[in-house]
Structures are given as structure tokens and as C-alpha cells.
Image (tube, rainbow, N blue to C red; front, side, top):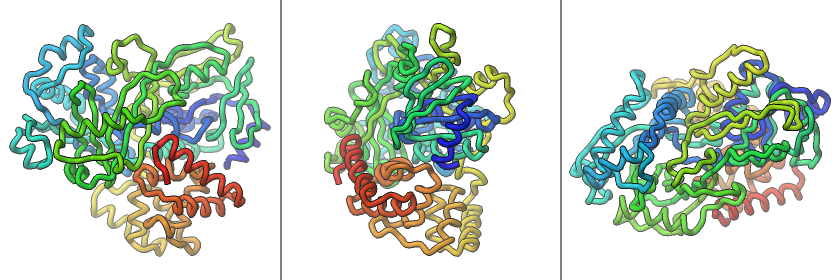
Amino acid sequence: MNRNEILRNLRQHPNINVLIVGGGINGIGVFRDLALNGVDVLLVERGDFCSGASAASSHMAHGGIRYLENGEFRLVREAVRERNRMIENAPHLVRPLPTTIPIFKIFSGLFNAPLKFLGWLDKPAERGAFIIKVGLILYDAFTGKKRAVPPHTFEPRRKALAKFPRLNPKVCYIATYYDGSIFSPERLALEVLLDGEAEGSHARALNYVSLVGAQGGQVTLRDELSGETFEVRPKLLINAAGPWIDFANRALGVSTRYIGGTKGSHIILDHPALRQAIGDHEFFFENKDGRIVLIFPLADKVMLGTSDIPVSDPDSVRCTDDEVDYFLGMLERVFPDLEVGRDQIVFSFSGVRPLPASNARNAGQISRDHSIQVLDGPWMGITFPVYSLVGGKWTSFRAFAEQVTDKALAYLGLSRQKHTSNLAIGGGKNYPRSEAERNRYIEALCAWTGLPQERVSGLFERYGTRAEQMAMYLAREADRPLKTLPGYSRREIGYLALYEKVEHLDDVVLRRSMLAFLGQLTRPALEELAEVIAQVLGWDSDRQSAEVRRCLEILADRHGVRL
């Protein structure tokens, strides 16, 4: 069903089993799991899907090696297991990531680490080679017998400098372990959502629909595109609004203080020398002030992050000048002879981690674990229970969704029919695993559609095996490349707009593609994209111009991009 059909159907049949408020990765993960198990479920998101906290991640699928110091062994075990599953289930978007730790001391932190583990010390202390080695041995142990990634290695200064010639010569050792990189978290979330909707008409998802309020058994929602309100009557409401959970509960008439989020910002650089210096490795290290920071390879660009600052208003967060100064300054610790300036920043972003409210003495000590907080009873003024999904992280979204779904199924008196543990995601379905299989797959798709090999290879790199539907759509009519964006065509953008729930121009440049993240946009490119989308979605010239203005404002205000 398209958007209008879903809205019309809900007005005629407002009774549903589960309403999910929030279209970040937690809400989307629950949506897919419930859909797989035949539950009548509606997900609403006040903006675009994966446009809030889930759009501000560090692009990592990781077990959280630093959580070991806080004693969160269950969380690390779960996250490592889920990291491996993401690499297996979404190989087109999640791949093993060699992560290198430059180490400048040997025995530093030997006594501080156990004190921090016991909660007796919160002042950061630089971790030396001994402590890091112990941590990596433990981390490898959580991977288990079935290894999706290789074990860690330790190398002395001589080998470290031979491998990374621009590395700070004061380094004592480097340690390299493996986690996973998520090239485009926004696409991954969208494909999970589309998989859920593909289960049937009982699973419906709407972006740009907000929660207005609730009374008795009725919830009032507003279509943010038309301004019209409508009502639904759920048996259960799942609050997956992330940093906005307490705000959503307030709209339901319930006062809570579940969230004590922290702000995390990143910048993306166009810096060929730095990109060459790190190779395909992420550098994950402790800055001089004790904060854990990262230098991350993102296609041909480099991402730097991240901050960890307590905030109270998730709508107001932006990457500040102070954060930019900090990120640029931290490079001196690892690559001191590389000069980096603000003019090399092509994109910045900032979001709020939906961490639980905590009295921890610093942000790094707040648990990254997840929980389900239940509100139920006649005192609330509503007749259905509310499950608030607190915490969580990108890597463990599937496990969290499974726990929420099991609880929801039990409440509805239903039993689980399907599991998601080994379920491929979107373009990861039937994904060719070897180079030979990949070549055969692309050759077959070329023969099937008549498209040139270079074009099909590009589609496969972007969409995995979803390239099949895309290629068939492209081959159906004459297509033309975009004048302003090499490698993209008019029908490719049209397909995204038509079949991937696009409502605004920024949906395409920020979340259906990596165009904005990788600094590939120009003013003419935005205008050409708007013109293509207008033809497909039926926008008039006024709407087309308005979409360009809206996108320019969002890029400038939230991402520091001025075209």
C-alpha cells in the first residue's frame, strides 16, 4: 500500500494491535519482527525514517570493547554476537573493519582500570599496552568459535611505522582488532523497514506522522504533510522515540524521566593524505584528555568523532565550533605531521544517544545497555499499556527488537512463528559471497537487463541484491545519466522516490543515498534531483522550488553545508 492507501485504510479501520511511535532503528527492528510474526502493526515517525538519533551514529557495528571496564560483560557478549550477525545478514552494507589502537605507554592504567571497574575511580587514565592486551584477549573470547572476524594482533613500533608511515613516531605499539563498519546506517534501517512491510498489509509504516495525544483507548496522530489528524485504537503502544521518549510519554499524559541522553557529533573530511595514511583501518584511540575518539574511513573520505556531552533538548543539538576544534586537534596525537583545516570539512552531524537517566559522574560511565520500561494501569487515563524502549545501540538493535517482540507477543496472547537471528536484510538476501560468485551474478544481471556491466556493478555496490529490482526498473524505459552526479541516472533516483517512501528532497540526499555525507552535492545537483523527483511524485514547480530551499536550509543548519 502507498501512503494515501494506508491513511485511508486507517480512517476506515482504526483498530490495530500495536502502534510503534518512532522510526529509528529500535522501532524499525521491532516493526519487522512483529510483521514477520503476523501482528497487525503500524509504525509512525514524525520525520523521515532514521532521521533522528539513529542517523547520527559512528557507522560502526561493534561489541563495545570499552564497556568491559564498566563490567558490562552481558552487553559486550550480546553486541559481539550481533555484530557478527550484522556482517552475515547485511554483507552489502556491513563489513569487517580492521580497527587499530595506537599505544603510547606500556603499564599506564594498570591499577586505574580495576578501580574504574569497581566504580571507585571516574577520572580517565591513559591505558597502556598491558591493559589493552588484556582487554583484547577478553574481547576475542566473546567472539566464540564461529568467527566472523579475525583475532587481534599486536605489533611493535618498527612494524607499526612500516605499516603506517605517517603515524606518530612516539608510538610504542599498535593493536589491531576487528569490528564492523556500517557504510550507510540510514539505508540499512530503511531496508529492514521495507522487509517488514513486504510481509503483508498487516504491516504499515508512515513517515511524517506525529503523535498528538491519547485518551481512553484512542491515540490521535497528525499527518505532518497535510496537517490533518486521525485516530487509531491500539491494544499496545511501543514508545521507540529514542531521545524523545519522555516527550512522547508526556503527549500521552504520562510524566516520565527515562532518558538522560548525551550528544555525539562527527565531521567528515575530504583529506586524501589522511585517507591514505589510515588505509582501510579505523583508528580508535584515547585522546590526551582521556576521551575515546576515532578516525574512520568512509569511502574516499575520513570521519572524525565523537563527543559525549549531556544534553536536555535533543532538537537543538548541532556540531559546534568547539567540537570541530577538538576533532581537528586530536589528529596531532596520532598523525602529527598532517595539516588539517576547516576548509576540508564537507559534512558534519550531531545526535543524541538515548541513554538511560543516570547519576553517573561522567558520560562515559552511563550504561549503553537497553531496557523496556512498562507503563500500565487506570491511573494513566489510557486503556492500553505503553512499552518505552530505553537505551540500546545500533549493533544490538535486532536482539533488543526480539526481546520487545517476545514481550508484545506474550501480552497479545500470541506465539512466535519466525526468528530474525539468521534472516538476511534487504540487499543482503542471496548475496554472492566470493569474487567469482559476484562476477557471475553481475554478468547474469547484465544479460537479463541489457544494462552495461559498469552500471550494474555500481548498482550492486550501492544496493546489494536489491540491484535486481533497480536494474529491471531502469531497463524498462530509456534512461539518462544525471548531468550533475556521475554514476547516477534519472530512473535510479526515480526508483528511490517511487518505491522507498520518499516525501522530501532531503530524504534522498541524506538517507536514501550518501550524496550529502560524502560531499557530492552542488546547488545544480539539488535542482536536478528535485526536477527528477518532481516528475515521479507529481510535484508542481512551486513545490519543486520549495523542496530545494528546504534542503538547502537543512544542510546549512544541521550539517554545516552551504551550497
